[in-house]
Length: 268
Image 1 (cartoon, one colour):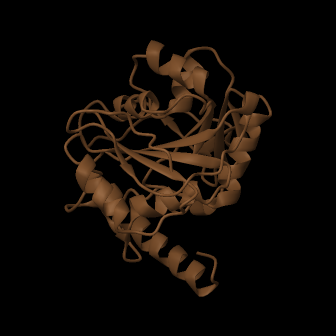
Image 2 (cartoon, rainbow, N blue to C red):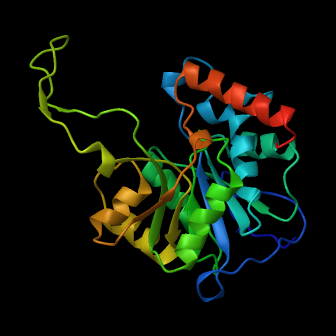
Image 3 (cartoon, one colour):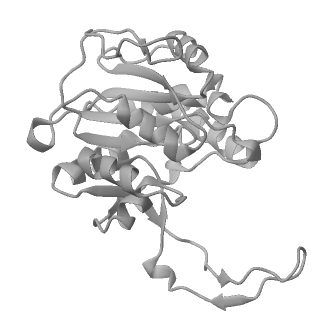
């Protein structure tokens, strides 16, 4: 494998070695890379290790997420953005688990916010990776078909693509309560058929995503939202129920059940 990390002082990029990766082409012969921000602590999941390092079926969620991206033969590089002071720990963690040898893995230290961490991941990409996926480490069970559908839509010319599901519940727009604990007044009921619950990986033309991170300073909840702020079109492809985000303890129970079913069916 060629060394994709850049020479740097301590705390810089660290690479998990493997063998030469399969070059996968997309727009104008571009390779596909995935950036996984994993620098957050995930306090809603309860006390303990950072969310990305919590065990799922005996394996850290981050490892599942890396495997999910590497399961796509189109993805030749995965960049893991670790806690600012934990790149070495994350590299050792990934070294200890079997990962597809055809995919390069690069570990870089992250920043204080998700946006900053994604930007640092983008900055670490070598030239030529002009299709970029951004994937939540807390979505460890996304199926490869969903990953491939996002990539294909970018290859077909979309500058930004998100997988998403129709909403099952009616959604209410509210006005904040006048005081803590008081009821929240409903101000509108959006048309549910026009709403979607967005998942990851989100896929982008690299130049489009870089431009969004360079120009959008508002705090947004996802990278597609940043691209929207620049006036670029974002399109939706079908998501998958198993690509849910593990945020609360009950989500972890559900993820364990999904993983157990996969193992029983020899899918994972």
